[in-house]
Image (cartoon, rainbow, N blue to C red; front, side, top):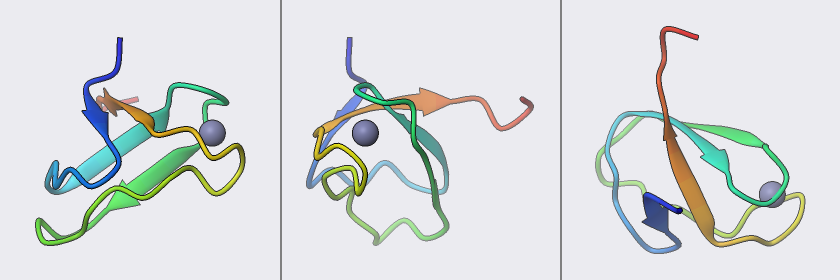
Length: 51
Ligand SMILES: [Zn+2]
């Protein structure tokens, strides 16, 4: 299940594409999630930065 979708502003952290596993690093709370650059998926999972 997706934690976030395109257009959400999840805040600082790492988010992983639910479609292909691509990880994006959001560095500012004003940044919105865009469709995955690799597969176009709009579902993003919150990923622990400790990994
Ligand atoms: Zn993807």
